[in-house]
Length: 290
Image (tube, rainbow, N blue to C red; front, side):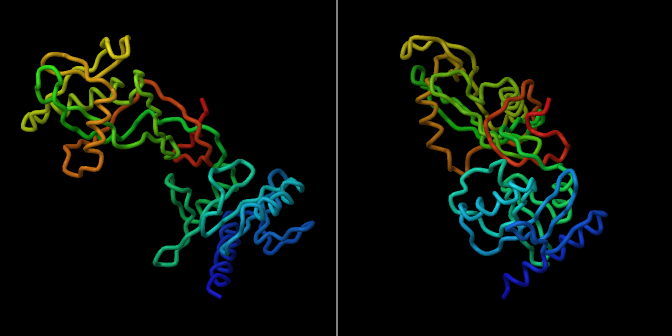
C-alpha cells in the first residue's frame, strides 16, 4: 500500500512539474503493448516515464523497454532500488533512482555524481540536458587530498616523506575518474607537476611538520634495467622502487592519523577514461565534448 501511495505521489508530481514547465503530459497512457505512467507526446522526442518501486529483473525491464524502442519512444525509468545484474549504465536504458527525504521531498539520484530534486531532473531530461556518454573527462580544476607517509631510505637510512592522492579526479558532471597506474611505468598520478607543486607548497608553508620531500624525477633502476619517474631520497637521491613505495603506502592507507592536505589544482592537461554514464554536468559541458 505504501508503494502505491508513493507511486501515485511521484506520478502526480511528474504531471504537476510538466504542467509548470508548459509541457504536455498524459497520465497512464496506453500504446501498443505498453502503458506509461506518464507520457510526453513530443513530436521530436516522445518520452515515457516509468515509475518502478517494486523489484523488477533486468531482463523484464529490457523486455518492456524494447516496446518503447520499437515505437521510437524514449523510455525513462525511475527505480527505487538498483536493478539486479545491471552492472553498468547503458545508453539503451535510462535508469535513475528516486528517493525522498524526511520532509517527503522527492529527489533523483545519479549515483555518486549528483542528486537533484525531481522537477530539476525532469526539466533537464526532457530538454536533453542529460545525455549518455561512454567516457568521462576530467575538469581542469580539481580539489585534491594528499596524504603524506614515511619511508626510510634503503641506502642512507634517512627518514623521507612520500605522498599519495587520496581522492579521485572528477568530470564536469562529477563522475569519479580513477587514473590507472601501472607498476614500473611513469604515469603515477603523484608524478604530475600540478600534484608535486601542491605537495611542495604545503611542505614549504608548514615548517613545523618538518616534511622531508625528496625530488621526483627520472632515475635508472638496476632492478628493471631502465629509467623511470620515481620518488627518491631527499638526502642521497637514491631511487625508491615502485614496489617498495606501494608497500609503504599500503601500510598507511587506512591510517586516519596520517598528515594530509586538501588543496585545489589546475590540470595542464585533462584526460579521459572509459566510464559509461548518464552525463548531467552543472556547467553544461558534457564529457567528451570539445
